[in-house]
Length: 210
Image (cartoon, rainbow, N blue to C red; front, side, top):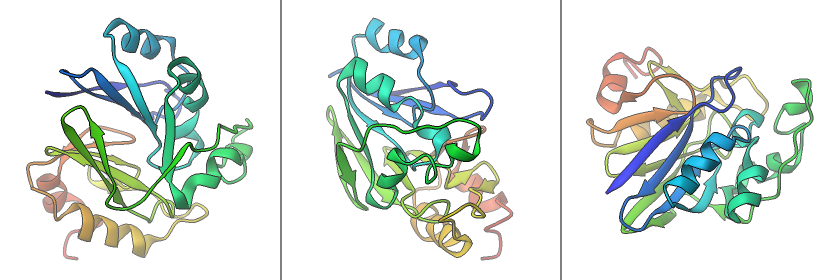
């Protein structure tokens, strides 16, 4: 059984950090650890989970700030799409240099590409490259669960006015890669409340009529 839990580690940015695990094997992945957290570390330990991967859906500072903490505690691999990999180690590229703090994380242990399939116990996590918010933005899909990072929000999309952003790519990613998923797919974004693909097709103002 595939299970998931939401954690808020960086309240000032309202970033969603998602822990996803296979109940049978106890293998887990951590999606967008925004900051160090003893509470989340203890939850992983208390539930005897084996943290296999730390996955960054993109390289902005509010999604990577806990990488080093969880990597050091669980000896997990940090992975990100190749187009965003340099953002992990550069405070200018991950924008923390402009947020009154200087954040540089460990370099990625492995690089992700569109179409990669990650094993989590008996489950497969599909990597979907969704450029737009950043060049290397990704979403993760498995069994009607979509972890959409900053690509798709409830009735909204990720901003594209930051360095590397592209509005046309963002719309194309959502329309051609996410809206083709089953309509009952749950959408768990990087910020804000959850949604469904059907609800976004019907009500997302950026995609209506496109």
